[in-house]
Image (cartoon, rainbow, N blue to C red; front, side, top):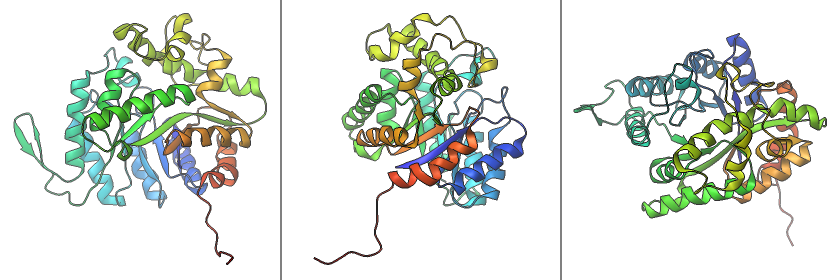
Length: 340
């Protein structure tokens, strides 16, 4: 299993770069950030500095969207970073949440998302693409590579993911829901004639290493509120059928959401999220508890766990993962083998 860290682009920018460097030092392979240009600093500017000050880590948004940037501009950003730093970027994309809603917009259609994935991926992989009636290609880009991973919850979005995505981002760590969603994506891939196992699976959720259960829950309760925005969209579109009750039941007490508090510990619009939901959706507790849940996720086919660090224990959690959790989840290799 690979490991990623998920950061907000809060000022000062140097702090974000510092945490990215710390993540790499502790063995994380990916550094993801929110992409909401009104709420936080511009991630692609930060990516350039992070890549400059690191050697191995891959960077990308969790997640961008097709609405707030021209797709060709997005592709050019990736292709430029890849030329500068050696193909160390990845694109997480979805229909749009905070980045579009803060400005009064709405998530894009799935048809728009599907088309944007194709345009961004082709251009950022140094290939030509048909766009707005013309064949476009970056004349300066050669050898750039970019995978596009799709964040999804609803049945149709999951199907789209299976049909076209290089990877699937599931933003919660509930084992039962993860099993259903991963199965749905893989079934869609198979129906589309793809190898279901070719799609990488990333589970993203808050990770907090500690022993004070009540404090950890309060620090991570915001996440259930964030997920609730997407679940509310699903319920509005499909009703309560078609997705697991475990995903839809918990939003019954949801009364609204203030994006000024989006993704932040202490979010006052997440009080409807129960302690049980926080425990199910997140990874909390001792290193052994984290390892046990990560192994269960690995058994479901999860290739990467990306841990959100929107809490007050960032450095310690990174340290414990680097020294204890990540080594335990790697395949054991011995220097010598004793002959029988």
